[in-house]
Image (cartoon, rainbow, N blue to C red; front, side, top):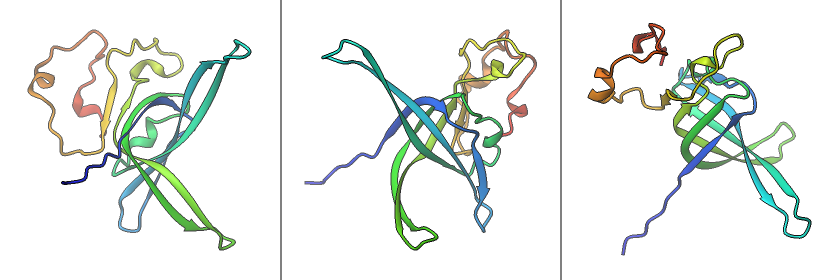
Length: 159
């Protein structure tokens, strides 16, 4: 009988800081950022609502233009997998780290989130897939422009 395993992470949260993009010696982009997710529950004994925030370290490969869009406070949807690794710090102590390796990311803040612009209705999230080789569906290519397009086309998006 074949064994089966799954390593899948889905996060919907807010960015804790602006994303940082660095390049490997071979020129591959590596963007890192943190995502905060909240959990609320009612304490059974006191009856009070409590809230807890979890922080998730995320990494996205081969998306060099991403840091311009992933800014602190923006809401994002992340799909990926957990990966654990270890390294030695400056004092020679072994450190362990678990991070989410992103396979797909959707920026939910969209176009109208910057200061001084109209608020966003979240009807058109900006998708940033890890793989640039994906082709858009024929329906997406022939869809009529909406009132929010402001003359922006797919050719204007740098990813």
